Image 1 (cartoon, rainbow, N blue to C red):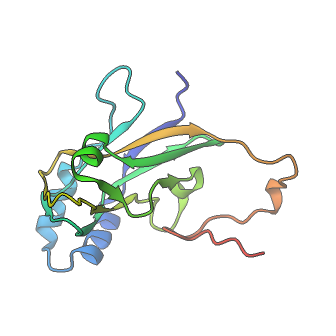
Image 2 (cartoon, helix red, strand yellow; image 1 turned 60 degrees about the vertical axis):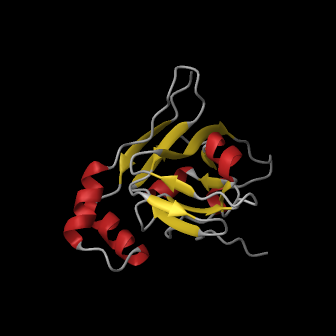
Image 3 (cartoon, helix red, strand yellow; image 1 turned 120 degrees about the vertical axis):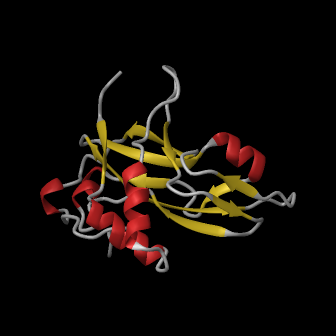
Length: 174
């Protein structure tokens, strides 16, 4: 197996700022408690491709409801690799849990962005069977898989921009 990445927590201050942006009514002490309990993603078995991300909070999603989750996680990734994030298969199968951007793509240079490469997940219970999803804090809800990628022969790497923003910060203009 190639070793191509390493998970870290974002700084406490970054997490507090991002959490307050998402959940403005939470107290700083409660947010620090959440931060202290964050568990880095890990594989469940020797043969698992995906690294499970664990929810930092308990929540209930009724059909059609959405929640944005600041995970508190960032990841160093080797050049030529990307982390692709998906809902945990069982949650997708049982509740049609969906990532709102379908597949989360974490580029190797996202680690160095202004928001420390903080990985967020925006998920929706897309159930058409009237099933509510109840997820307890510390439960795996998303999985990340490292994937190698290639570039075209004519890419001039020296001419490409350097990332300095967070989510959605790389907009290619013609």
